[in-house]
Amino acid sequence: MKIMIIHGQNHKGSTWNISHLLVQKIQGEKEVKEYFLPRDLTHFCAGCYACLEDRAHCPYWQEKEPILQDMLGADLLIFTSPNYCMMPSAPMKAFLDLFFTNWMTHKPLKEMFSKRAVVISSTAGAGAKKTVKLIGNNLTNWGIPEIHRYGAVVNAMNWDMVPPKKKAGIEKDMDKLARKLSRCGKVSVGVRTRILFWFYGSMQKAGWGASPAEKQYWLENGWLSGGRPWKENRGKEY
Image (tube, rainbow, N blue to C red; front, side, top):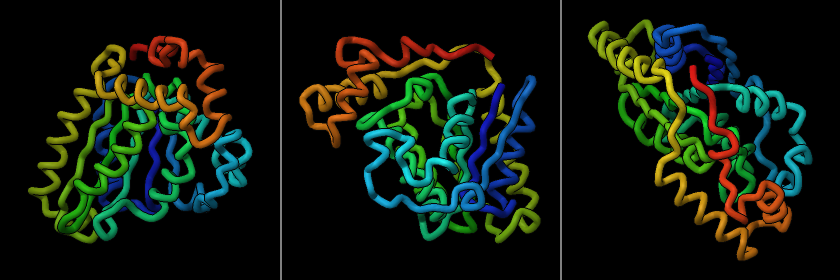
């Protein structure tokens, strides 16, 4: 299984440790690639909309392209972010902004419809659920059909300070999640994803997209004439 982890911070705190606990527990042969934000993507979206015409026209494409290629090649995507002021970290929010073209309302990538994703956040007190919800909502709009969200209240400023009872509970949760992710089988595209795709496709067909290039993209992929990305890219078993 190819696993890609995108960390919304440079340091290796509680959220990082939880993600690695999960990866360790996933069964089978694994190939893991990690990116750290903002170290590996230092920019904020400029709002120039150049990416709507062509992804490669983004002024930060040189940094974004290798990340995108690794995302496309991964079977499992893991997004981590500590809770900062009831939201994801600023670098994680910037990451999502820089890849907004992936949304189904713009230029969805067919590979996303065969992936699983996990969103992990930790907090000393409150806000982890809001953090994973915001990131997860973005991934839903990317077309990822199976998304697991996990928010942990650790009552500590770092992993070493997390009470043993809390760590035991987190480890039990990661055992359970790892078993789900280790199972063989293809990802099933559910009703919600299908409805969203139909809705956004109807917008493109009516010419209500943000750019004519978006409609052309949908036409070229055959999605305005009955084609569906999950039928083209059914994913692989692992």
